[in-house]
Length: 214
Ligand SMILES: Cc1cc2nc3c(=O)[nH]c(=O)nc-3n(C[C@H](O)[C@H](O)[C@H](O)COP(=O)(O)O)c2cc1C
Image 1 (cartoon, rainbow, N blue to C red):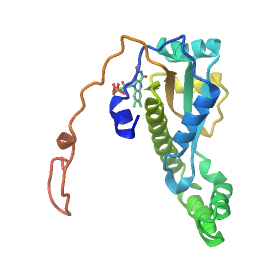
Image 2: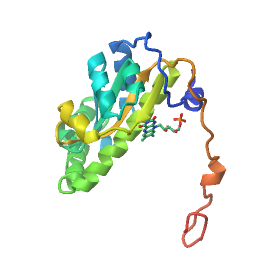
Image 3: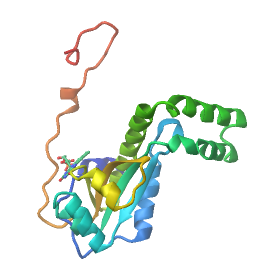
Image 4: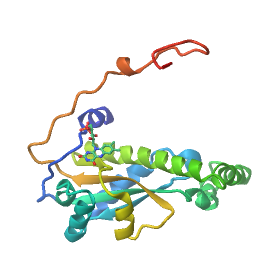
């Protein structure tokens, strides 16, 4: 499926085929596509906790206020945003040097820039990690749609409880949960969207008033 079809055919699925599994290799392939998403300074803040054990999914379903799809989907992914992701920058930036993309001077600039931007600014680090995790999640869902799989992004769960029960460290914010599998019959079709023309101001200019001014 091409990317345009994947984007327009993806829906949030409520009813999963409980008989159709997804392999670990398939999950990792989708997460590699998620990893292609852009991140601030290429920090790559996103981490993934994959839950496939049925009893573990039942526990997660309780944490998600009983949403049945969490137990039905063969795979549930907790998408985590590492608020201290920038601390890994020396390693990440070195990989760009090793790949021959930039030199040591650029590497050192990146390391110092991320420390300056996030080292003493927890709010900025939190926002940036969540932004990046959201982009990775969209990549994940688009890649799954491209392969004929179904997903559902979810935040209707007790994130603090999920962290506690699944032993997720303090430094990680739970950005989202994504159910993954194959759809069965009975799901809603794509819900109507506001057209781009209804939500867009074209030709913004300094001082010009427009629909988004109030
Ligand atoms: C951040 C986020 C959180 C969501 N949380 C839930 C959820 O907890 N339960 C649920 O059934 N759907 C959840 N959804 C799915 C939305 O309801 C769905 O994306 C929206 O209605 C549009 O439908 P579509 O994705 O099928 O196009 C969530 C979506 C997003 C982006």
